[in-house]
Length: 485
Image 1 (cartoon, one colour):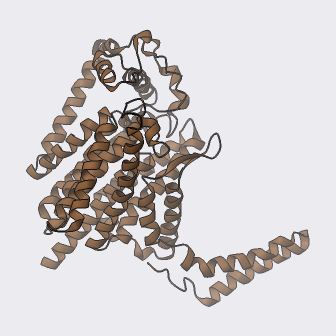
Image 2 (cartoon, rainbow, N blue to C red):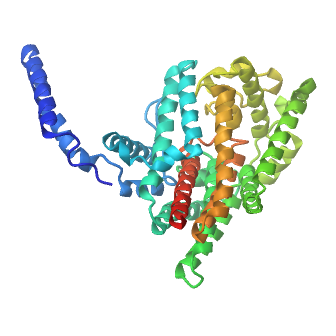
């Protein structure tokens, strides 16, 4: 991508520079603020170098995906943190895309104006902006809104600019898989030094992941990419052996991460591939919706949810995974018990502000008054400042029912689009990608039943990349149809 050499005609550029020069020099001389004399020249230099320095950069795009698995949390101040270095690259790429579109509006990909998916995404962003106005924490909500921008721009817009041919798809997959493979290998080696114990998995994966849930989640999401790459690689290619090695290592890391959610989510992704191929998306989604409504109604009626209140003094954190699983079934696992504590608080918050919610990024500061003492556990002080541990409930209580509805409409539209693409695309390569995306998307949505990971750099990047990839496939389908016309 190359920006125009001359965005404005010479007379307009000369006029703007002359006016800026006159104003800055007059102010500098009258106020004895001589550094202002340099401003016009700095502005002219930035204008001259802008086409070369700030624009969507393909190498930066690849670098962003390489660094996602390898990034770590960097707490700059007590209130400001950064996922480094991937969040830095997300910001730079977002700035480049925005400036490029401002200077060349005609370069906006047509598929964005034609697809319902982008309409739902845009409506969701607009509603988030509206809830910021009514937020109980305006500053935190605005920060959340800006962060949403540098997820959408590099991961949804970025692929539309940079993925042009089959080789680009392969490079994209390699940028995910190679660093993740290196990371999983070193985690397994370090974990082995502790005897592969459940207690030490967090120490083995530091500093790249906050906890074993995030680590197992990213492995689960990238395994379908590795399996797809293996499936599409020619039978006698040497690369096929490396991909098989990577799949085996990934499965080992997935098992040894000891994440119950990831163990359930990965098979669910495989089931969704069958659902897509059988064209069962609509009945499956309707069935899932009915089950959610029935189970919620059952819990609320006669306050049956109170049956799940834990015994404060009999909830434990176990260092052995077998005991951890047994405690889960017995209702004595501390993480599950604390989830109930926050879910009850979240539902009570939602009934208090059902339309606009409390505002994005506001849960932690406001949920304690809505908790019930009966559900309190010995970790309820929440020193980690974590949230409600259910992304759908988090959306509803922070952005109201409308925020949740718009997200669900986007997710449903993505599945329906994938089902249509898997049937109508002529290319076997692209049909296979559609099936893999359906598995990845399902894994993301299942994981977020017990967590809230879509706003994190490692999982959010995958979710929004799925959306960008679907838009690419829709663009490819339109190209195929136009060729046949």
